[in-house]
Amino acid sequence: MQFPEQVVLVTGAGRGLGAHIAQAFLGTGARVVVNYRSSADAAEALAANAGPGRALAVQADVTNPEDVAALFAAAERHFGAAITTVVNNALADFSFNGDARSTAGTIAWADFDAQFSGSVRGALNTTQAALPGMKAHGFGRIVNIGTNLFQNPVVPYHDYTAAKAALLSLTRTLAVDLGPANISVNMVSGGLLRTTDASAATPEEVFDYIAAATPLRRVTTPAELADTVLFFASPWARSVTGQNIMVDGGLVMN
Image (cartoon, rainbow, N blue to C red; front, side):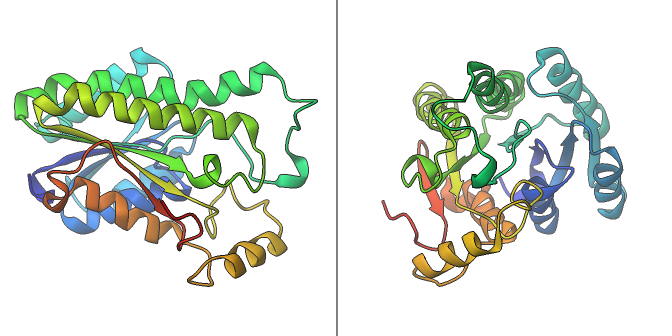
């Protein structure tokens, strides 16, 4: 399915990486559902700037299945078509500040619970809501946003990293389960991005360290990561599923 035929849901798209991903899809001619939890003004502005009929901003907490069901219904009413492509980007509140992280001796299970709920439960809710429409179209693309930290834990963000590792496992089991319906499930894993709201608290010397350790000698931008998300949703990835691509300038090599 070509991009102009797709209806794309990007979760957590009101700001940060999600906004860059939503804008990237809009640039291809796709119709985009700009999901947000609390960034109403930014999400509404993004949708309004896309042009008539191109985007719809919808408030929903993706960890809540009732919210997700309402989001999918609103999207189908607005576009007259079901969502065909889901990008699970929404992130439970988290700040990438290594100096302020919870260490092994202080971290609480509630921290893990919040991250697992945001990453895994949210992705499961959107996937389940998308299945009827994807199966009716005979086409579906699910792209989950991961991290390179579970392969290169330069900063031990225990809760965040464990949740994203679980999301990679879910990505691969869903790929096996949904492949016969022509639904692919893949992951794009970034490293530190320059700059999103989540990485705004990262000290400059950390950016410099990452850049120096990277073959490209620079820190990846959100727009560069969004390019790879587009690849997984494109016809060029029609035979790719269950994969995890690192988009970090070569810092981690598989």
